[in-house]
Every structure is written in structure tokens, then in C-alpha cells.
Image 1 (cartoon, rainbow, N blue to C red):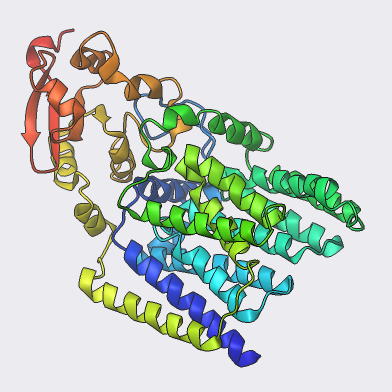
Image 2 (image 1 turned 135 degrees about the vertical axis):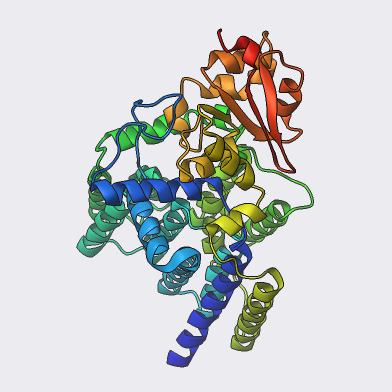
Amino acid sequence: MQCKNKWSIFFLLSWSFLVVSISLWFADPDVFWHLKVGEWIVSNNAIPRYDIYSWSVYGEPWTAHQWLWEVILYTVHEYFGLLGMWALAFVMGVTSGAFIRAGLKASGVSENVATLAGGLGILLLIGWFKPWPQVGMYALFSAYLYLSLRNKWGPIEAIYTALLGLVWANIHSTAVMLPLLLFAEICYKLLFKRNDLADMRWRLAAVASAGIATLLNPHGLGLWAYAFGQGLSTSIYREIIQSWMPYHFGFNSLSFIFFIGMIILFIAVRQGKEKDLEFLRAAGFWAFALMSRIYSPLAILSTAALAGKIKFELSSRFIKILAFIYLLAGLINLPLNGVPSDLEQVAKENNYPVAAVEYIKNEGLEKIYNDHGWGGYLLWKEIPVYIDGRNDVYADIIEEFININQLEQPVGKTIKETGAKTVLTRINGRLDVSLRESEWWEEVYREDIAVIYVKATLHNKF
């Protein structure tokens, strides 16, 4: 049995290694500003409550709900650099798979099937395992899945849910899901498992302890207000933020992941599991994911838990072969793509405006009207931004920003009226095309990635 456990852990390690090695060259814009916020928190020994990074909404209230992860991320980056950040994502990947595996084993699933299901959860999250707060949330959500799959509730579990809620509430605002999911399980029991209500009081205690624990954060009940407020704002975000957009189908990994998920759901129905909690949870999150892909990781992890409940046989030899295949694939991928030396190199390889930002700093240009996806990088480079990934801060301007090409007046005039003095945008993008002939702006810099406009001298007096 001990030998089997070692192979199972090796299996999860190898799959997580492959996923994270592929992600080494992906620079999510949010990672940049999370690092900067973490630096501010460590330097000031406080949690920011107002915007200090933009010129457009400076001083506006801001709910820094991911503060704990930002502190961890900044500290790891300071001591261990870029590879330390990705090692952090690697640990979260292994943790996610291990929780699913442990939960399935506790529910009676065989070692091999539980291990494969845990690995599947890691593998299908291949596009999401980056060193951002969400990756910590994936591990915490998997911890919830462990408790749910284990399905044994008592005083110890009530304490566990309290600890889980406490950590989760300071990592990510999705912590409010924890008591809601636990309460949904109670409703499920009342509807479908009325003969299994012996542990109901401890389930209720878990809901209460998790709910109270989520209030133990710098924002208190404001975390709940933030989570629901942002959840209701997804229609705006879905127009501009890729991770919030509706699920995308085409010749890409998202289609493959969805296809695998639907196969697992279909097999589960064929085996009469459509009323099982695991099926309903996975199907529910997939419904949310179709509306906004931000829910995809939760759908994937829930589907991995469901996969472990499907009846099939698996040999230990198959697990060992897969472990070596994915470890080898990860080891081959590293020299093929190279290991980046630092985050600046990753930024260059991911077409961030590295040279353009140097031009801005050298020329002393101010009040930058920037593309949304570049806001985090500018913030990291200590340049005040018009907008970045902290979308809740920009509630008063984000809709106009999204729909700027649809307004009645010229784009150049609209940008001028924001108070901007400089525009940094993608070459041949929507703003570049609009500003080329604008009487309010003149081009001062152009290269393969970015173009910079400044207010036309003729109109500076206005």
C-alpha cells in the first residue's frame, strides 16, 4: 500500500510539473500588479483600502481581497525570483490533485482511479495554473471537494471548514462560495437523501463556521458585498476581459477540455449518476462556465471529482506509465522553450510594451491612457495607469472605456476629455486606427508592438 501511495504522489507531481512547465512563458497581466500590491503591503504593513496606482480614479475605494496571496507572491519572488513564483503554482497544482484524490479514496474509490481523477483535475487546468491568486483558490476549492467527497461531518469537520473559510477569505473573494456550497449540500440531502440526515446538525455547524470565518478578513462583511457586486457586473467584464468572456469554442484547448468534461458527464448519466451530488455540482459549474469562462476551473475540478465516481478499472502499471510520460514531456518542454531568467524576459516574449514603457519613462510622459491588458505591467513599472485588472475600482469609467468606439463623438476627443496626455496602445489596434488621423493627438513613437500618441500641440491649450 505504501508503494502505491508513492506512485500516486509521483503521478500527481509529474502531471503538475508538465502543466506548470508549459505555463512558464505565459505572463498574465494581473500577476504584475499583484506583485506590486504585495510589495506595498509588505513595505507599509497595511492593507490598501483606496486606489493608489491610477491617475484616473486615484483615491477611490478599493477592496484588496487578494492581499494574502499578494504578500506570499511578492515574498517568494523577492527570495526565489521567477522560478519561485512558478514553484508556488506547482505546489498549488499538486495540492489540488492530492485533495481530490484523498477525498475520493475516503469515499471508497480505488487508489488508481482516485489518483487518475486527481491528475485529470491538474491536467485540464493547463491554461489556468499561473502564479495568480486564483491558483491558490483552486487548491482551497479542492479542499472543499475533499470534505464533500469524504462526506463525514462532525466537530472536527466544522473546525476544518472554519480554517478553510478563514484562509480562503484572505486569498480570494470567492470564499463566499464555501458556506453557500455547504448549504446547497444540505438542500441536496433534504431533496434526494432524506434517509441520510443523521449528521445534519454538524453540517449546519459547518455552514455557520465557514460563514463566520469568511468575515475574518480586513473588509469584513464588505467581502460579501464585493463578491456579489462583482458577480452581477460580469456582463460588462465579458466584453473586454478574456477570462470573463463566454466559453470559447474552436481549434483550441478550451474545446478539448469542454469535450472531455461532457464525455465524463455523459458517462455519469449512462451509469445513473445524474442525481448524485458530484454530477449536479459539475453540471452546474459547466452551465456557469458557458456564460463566463471564469468559472471553468471550478467546473474542471468538480468534473475531476465526478470522474472518480465513474465505475471503471485501472491498473497500477497504467498509472506508472502515464507518470513517466508526463514527466518526460515536461522535461522535454523546458529545453525546447527555455527557462526565462526573470519576469521582464517573460514580458518581452509575451508582447508587452517593454521598449515603449522605457520611452515613456525616459521622456517623462504622464497621464497614460492605456490598453486594459497592459495596465498591470505599467503598474509594475511604477507608471500611473488609466485602467488595469482591478476592475471594481474603475466602475465609473470602465463602460465608456469598453464602448469608446461606439460613442457619438470622435474617439480622440473622448480620450482628451478624460484628462489623458498620452495614449499607449497596440499597433494597428482599435485606438491606433482611430487616432492616426485625429486632430487631438499626434504620434511620437511606433514599433512592432506598441504606438504612443501625445496631445497635439495645437490643442494643448484646450
